Image (cartoon, rainbow, N blue to C red; front, side, top):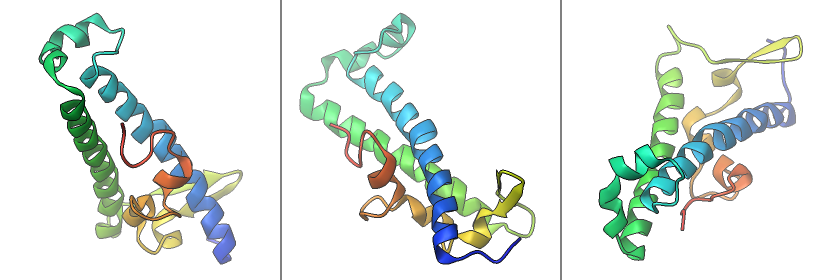
Length: 133
């Protein structure tokens, strides 16, 4: 792997983070929130989770916030898994003809999500944000 500047590392991390947040976290959260709020057009899910139809707005908010925390935590733990097992796992990103080991680029892979930081992936790339309602 070529020696990368701090800016190059940041660009690669942010490209990856944008994909993770928009294509994994936000998509999963939108689907789950649609079920909790009973706004999904999927009749199978409406029937399967009909118990959510009796939730008031405060209860819906609590469930959606729990979903947000849970989905975010799963992504965090997944990324940390690579860091904690670098002897047998790697997370390689390809940009053009170059490959980059994300664990070598990031100081702490899971923390890139940074739920409470302005420069975290959620704040930068989520259309939903940290809290969902």
